[in-house]
Length: 248
Length: 223
Image 1 (spheres, rainbow over the protein chains, first blue to last red):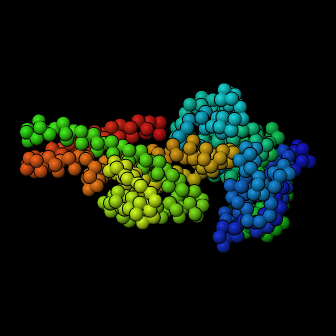
Image 2 (tube, chains in turn brown, orange):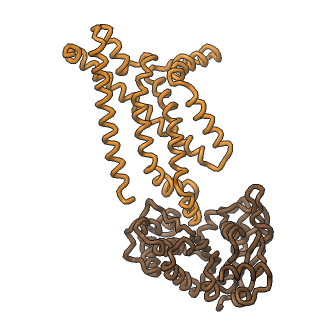
Image 3 (tube, each protein chain N blue to C red):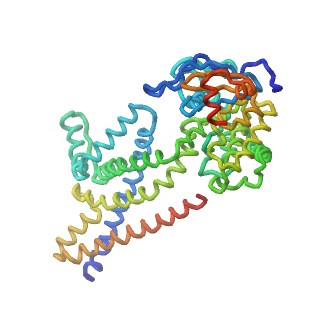
């Protein structure tokens, strides 16, 4: 857990989110500090993914605030595109751009946003590909990759923007079992490099091994939180115990 | 038959050229209109959606021949006589182009809307999550994928529009049907005249749809 406890990267205060009449997030408050790896678990419909999607405003919040590096990103005047450049996101269904090959998937945003020259973007993309072990797939199209390879490219694509925070929305849930390991390994390496990460997952083993803190969500609230050992091995709340009994 | 071809062949070919000119002009503006209203209908903005919906409903709900009369006779009358102070005279080509562009544009906007909505929302979300703006994401990620699914419908619409130019004979534009009417009146050879005209349309449209098929196949490479 060698996280540098200090600077708060993400501060969620009294966050609420409704879809019409359905209140998905009721009152969420939590901080994520620099270098911390936070895993969010909970039954489906508990609001985990919605919470994650509020952190880069893919969902507009209904109440409360989300601060990234001290800036309230729910404020109307915030340039959300600038904020998102610093927050990588990895999706359950990979969402690689189907019309572009791997290298173009990775260089599109850095080149469009003038983060660097196209040559530099390509060079960095190749570095990232070698980190996830897929250099030979640079010219392939997403349809030619396996699920695990797609997700590794998706992670590498997010890293090309050199974000300070990475969000993972059930990154292994759509994968065949034998491909889960390769993706978790990439995430593990990222965590040990000190990346600030928020991960929604059902991989309890991964949560125990890699995370600094686990949040258990149910019914739109954070029901319980603690270190992986506290929460996964010695849960206190009945709902947490109930959930863990079902999944473990 | 031979007499018509030798005596009126050149005239009919010129008329076919005008038909194609009218169709091309109409299609060009229809694409612009279709893209604008197609985009308006997918934006997350009620007002934009309603504007696009009203446009499509109005154009779809009016026969093209009525639209043609309305634009060619009705609009100048409105501005020159009812409101007054204007002196607008539309040529048959101008009125025809506007009419085709509006009509085809309405259908194109529906094709474009459906095409955009057929692309998984995850593609837009992934692009936005990287910090790209809505319009860059649309242009670089969503539209290229949408166009592939739109191509067959767009080609279909092109062909319909090409054939719809014949309706504009009613406002006196000398396209193929209008010219053929004169040929028939001069020669009294109704069967031969309309057979030739039918074959001419058939040839042009077959060439169009065959080459469109080739474009479609080319675009599907790498999918």
